[in-house]
Length: 163
Image (cartoon, rainbow, N blue to C red; front, side, top):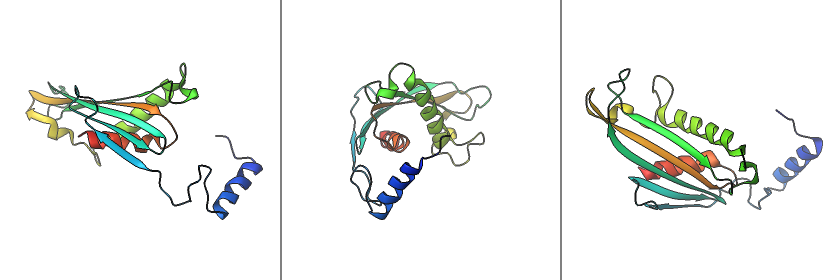
């Protein structure tokens, strides 16, 4: 991890003292949030979220499937995030792959909890239709259309409102 230079520290302290951020907001002022649902008719749920200048599109598709042999009492959820190369110059080429993977894993942990499933936002046992035979398989996709910070927050909001 790279530390901050003295000039950067001075800039940050000055912003705190003057109660202003680099984008013009005050320290405690939130970014504007807008939500639009039903943006992808083919999906079972979808949303477009704008958080400041960050824009996310998320969708959920549900299919009936078979529970895994290891977890016959639980449904399945797959989460995938894609960072559009047009969202940020750093996302061009292979730059988006690492961030896409990090965001996907972070959302997986947030929504499904740890190995025990404790604290999960999605209860996998609630996805069982017939014990050991039929479950719901959920496919959650997120697309980063534009990036101006708060990607994980915006993705989480977009996924939440798709349900």
